[in-house]
Image (cartoon, helix red, strand yellow):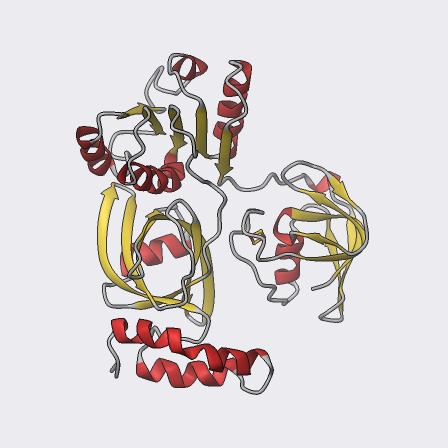
Length: 362
Ligand code: FES
């Protein structure tokens, strides 16, 4: 049973600075302090973010909005960013990133979680995470920002790409953004229009905002270059699977619509064939370990396959939490194909594959 309420625990977190300094200086162990703190409240920790589930709300057939209240360690989070959610099952810790659709000053946040067929964590969260449970989150990351200028904005989303855009949009309208905003959301079928009721309520309240849906499973239902051409807008924010995002950015540029373009994609990284991936020697310097690997999978995956547990967040090359030094050899950026060979340069192992033998500081 918790000895403190979560509000008091949040308050207490602000007074833990001396303990943080002692841990940073090596005088105390953070794990020991956390053990004491969690006996006061299951969400109280020195530095790590824990949050209690306050409510669950289905916002589409396959998407749940989870309302949580964080301990005092969630710093400077913004709607539209992403956080890693961790959950343990049968002694195995799983983690995955989800978008923040709202962030309040009192530590209340909302995350949107889409069901992934066969996805272990999303199905656990959707089907078994009850109100009142406490879960661990990573720190928020993500670069999407609402344009500063009061010019027309076009938001293009496909699938769960709606979630960061919805968070940004709701905040911007609430802050008084008054230039025209159009949101086009492409989903496969009816029932998948996440936050449809919230969006319709926003459209009814703010006359500068309009929303439309496209259904890609229907003949002629996909968004096309003509949709963009028909809408006057100075800024484009686009989010969705990689193919969709790349295509939409191409339409924007081909239409000569300027450089105010922000994009994020969530798709899996491209995987090469066996023929393209000869065996390579992986040296993990900090762990003093060597292993045979390939040029196909990311260094993060190959480190994990060899029993290492490197820090990571998004696994998409966005959050930088996996960054480590390339000590020797060459790596290939799995997103762009670009090669990096300069020793001692920081790389992101979640999106870097070995290009020959390689040594990294993991
Ligand atoms: S885990 Fe986020 S950049 Fe690598």
